[in-house]
Image (spheres, rainbow, N blue to C red):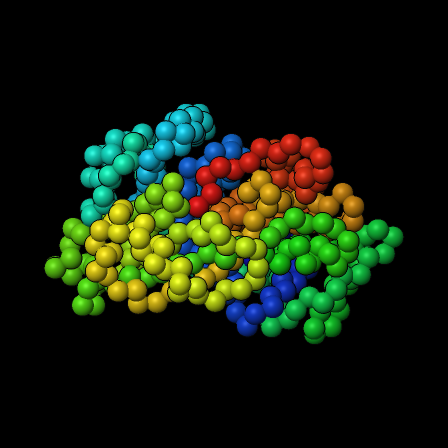
Length: 379
């Protein structure tokens, strides 16, 4: 998010930018730990619109930004087994189509034909969008950063924000572990740590960190799932399959198979150690949907943090309490894929342009007593 905002601001001529990164490298936090999925299949109109813009930009990323990225549009396949989810997704398909997205409703047999090795026992229906896919989080992030730097923005690494000074109800300075930076404007793109940054100036940013796991499976005996002995046992492309009722998902990652699942008992926190005792619960579900995983070997695993808001929608825009303080965080698991559009929208707001986007569902003050419309398609 920070790199996208910086690039879009620089494109608009605002180049006196300092991007502050706590770690030694960019994209080593949640960005570098996610599965890379990009999809149009959301339940909230604003998220669908952001997907349309973001995915279109990723398809032309090298042309527009100047850096090549790994980008595959092999589709998302949602599997639905509960009647209530079927009814909701049927409505969602109509909503997505009304925004010009080509989403198909499939029978279990049709879904199975798209994903070799898939067991569709109990599945009542599925949705598929061929324009969805998998992209390269590191490439997108570094591409935006390099593009912003080329236009004059500065990127400082291994630097932690320790405070924000406010004068006359306006941002005046950012204090860091390497000194202070005078500025009338701060963009809070701290992801799971966005709440901590808000607390520095007394602004409530309701974002909670929630751990998610990703595992990589190799075929029995090692090697690649593309080896002749395993062809046809798992998808050969990067189709991303999601069993929506359990949140189990998988897609090809090089010669391996990437998979994961949300833990309904996970509590908010910043711990990103891998809970190996959770793996058996995942495998139990995994074997039902992709039986070949029963004999596969988990070669490695990692955990990262979702940045969750109460309604699973992001916060984009200025604070109504402190002038000059903007937030772009809380994307609840779909941040990377919306970074191109979200960065463009906030850059427009900051530079006084019309973003041509209704930001009311994403304002920071929406949680102050009024009902919000939640995003339901969170994995």
